[in-house]
Length: 119
Image (cartoon, rainbow, N blue to C red; front, top):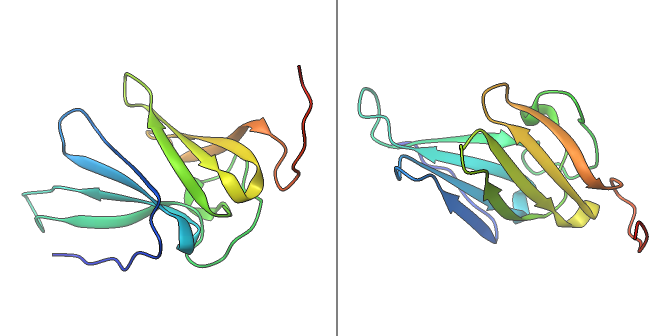
């Protein structure tokens, strides 16, 4: 099986069929997907969003794997399991990954800027 080293993972969510687990690999500044693929290796681990070990605040409207995250923590799947919401805590933002297109966009906050406004 494929093996991915994690560094301080602080969030995870499983799809409804338990065929994929999304992991906020906080210390590595990425989100991983671990899936079951019986046709090949029983366990496949890949980086879904972020650049391994390279924190930053970039990548909106591009491929999620090319984006830079900073200490992602919380993860939520939408009910149809087409969208993954990421609490990009170090960037003070919520990011959205379209799982079919594998693209990312910031939907709340301003990348890298903490604050209190918007009421």
